[in-house]
Length: 631
Image (tube, rainbow, N blue to C red):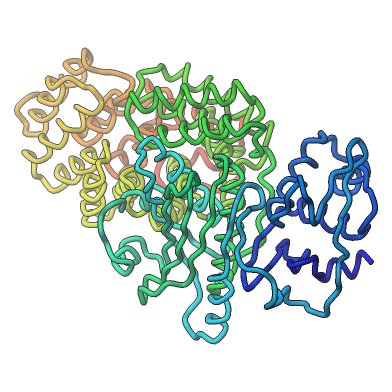
């Protein structure tokens, strides 16, 4: 009988389709959680019999240590979905201290499409897992697409869901739903999804679908809204073709009782189904492992923390830290909250004034807890890779970056940071490929454009570097003036060089006197040989001790000395050593000592020499690659 039940059956007014986890009536479908459907199927296999709670738990949750409450919840959701009254039951009766009994006799019909009868009553008022999902539009959409020659979905941007509840404090809900959809699509190998930074940059711009498609390089967009209706939060999601402006699908779900975690999980299934109906090559969703949360309050704290984390200001980051710390205090096994804390600690260096050593230790503690709960948490893997590279273990760092990208191919930050490590290792062309992948996913992010400007400065590609640096500045990138200054110096525009250098130094909190000294030295007004000693009072670790400026001015021993003073694990400035301005610095004997201190020679022996040793005449330092490790 079990085999027949799995192929579908009628139960009173409802057609039950276990293979699709749905029940249907009058052209509408209501989807159930897998375990909720499993309870219904098992009861339907024993109609009229009292089935004990223990038997149901053993059959539906085999080999799992679960409380009776999960079964109580499943039966409650079944009753809501079937519009059954526990006081006067038609479908499921509670037998006190014994179990449950199915009152209706299942009827079998030869239908593999889970089509409902036309005689059943209208209206579905309840929802599985606290959700009411109206998917009639999806059925019509699938029918229409079956006869359509329109191209399928290959790339998507998820615009920030609009909070239409009238309560600005609920923005974290709409933002959280947006991030969930981005996260789900980013796991699909055949789909490209624009990064959150770029999607959110278009908030309230009033652009058409075609204009958004052009700016983000996508063929489709997903947009949504959250409304407050009759005590419920109603979420509407639409899929739009940016090439034609036509709608490809629209679905609605209701969040009942504030169950955001269930809402996001259900939304993920809906979006994947909508994309599949529109011709996208999508895989079934995988379990999030350590993303499971024990308490709705914990999940809400996490969403509030995530929303605050995205706003890079001291006030917002302090708020994010409080939300996330409270979330992990309530549930220390919730991996996403630990991963967000790790990310927060990394950016705290610049925004909260916390010391580098302290933030590294805090980030490392958080990332280890995240990965202990969920070894495949991509956010944690990316932060762990960055910390591992800081510690000089480039082999393990690259392995973690590659693992993160395999799990989530559209993770822009993973591609970006991986590219930065490749730069540090001297693989400039490979770094460019990785950074270019990040830029395609996140074209409107200031940080991504800044790193691309740096990559172009290494090659160099002067005109494109200038365009990219200006674009980074347009998106409020703090370090963009550095590459504008470099461009003007190379072009001999010394007044513009001084202006941009001053803006760059202001970001790094370097006193104007240092900028003035460097500008005068560039104009030949002071003896360059005295520059290092005159700049010494202004040297701070965060500005690389003026190594790049020394190299630009031809003070090569001073530049090398500055590189040696710079702690290689405390930032990305050290990779300036691959700029063309450092070529003479790389020829100095002490440069090999620097490379050995950083451990780059060990990586090269395992993976091949850097680009400077592969094209034309190898540079002087390249003899280090031919020397056996440890000698």
